[in-house]
Length: 98
Picture (cartoon, rainbow, N blue to C red):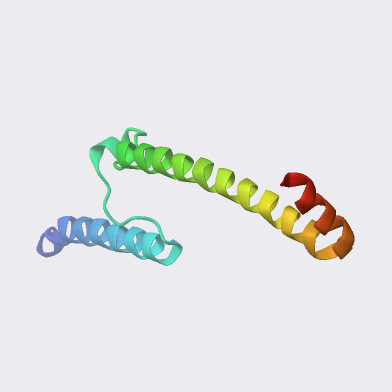
């Protein structure tokens, strides 16, 4: 029995290493980030500040694009009205603007 006493610590280390390898495999399979920092373990993601900055930049860009889309929609509405209205009405409106 004494001859196998060294086997217990070796099995414990092997079990811990196998567990960590399994966790890494599961994270890779499901697309989770591989690195794990202490802040992440406490509930704060490591890239929290970067994520907030990206969200702010995307929100600003989104507002700009929404404004641009609304202006383009107005221009398209005018072009559709010009294209579908009879020629006489368009000519009258152009003359009234002069």
